[in-house]
Length: 166
Image (tube, rainbow, N blue to C red):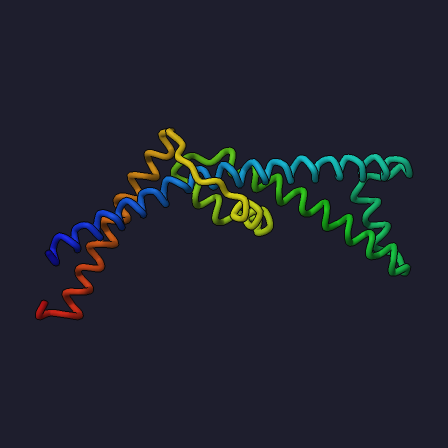
């Protein structure tokens, strides 16, 4: 009976891990969609700022530098805000480009190393579970299966070391 329960728990754990790994491509896809929306919105803002800078015959970086070199605190804060918007646009665009160019093997690492915290939080809060029938999902399912088996083996090994008489 004890062995039957142990086997059932192993299978439940394995299925749980596989399902969890299958969610990763969906999560990254939903993250990408949100990130793409942020990039588009940011690009619209940058275009408008460039248009405004052009009215006074300046490039956007020149316009921002002018605002940052002032003694007027209000204007300085506006310049800092514009500089932050420009930097954010570059960061978001770079992150999206890296994600779109990543292959299924490097995608999770690119996702983790270039994570945009606010976009991640939005994605997590609105994540919709599902099961995509793609090669990428099958690859992640296989990685989940291998991970589950490895974790179970490690747990058994540790259990035997900690409880040698059982």
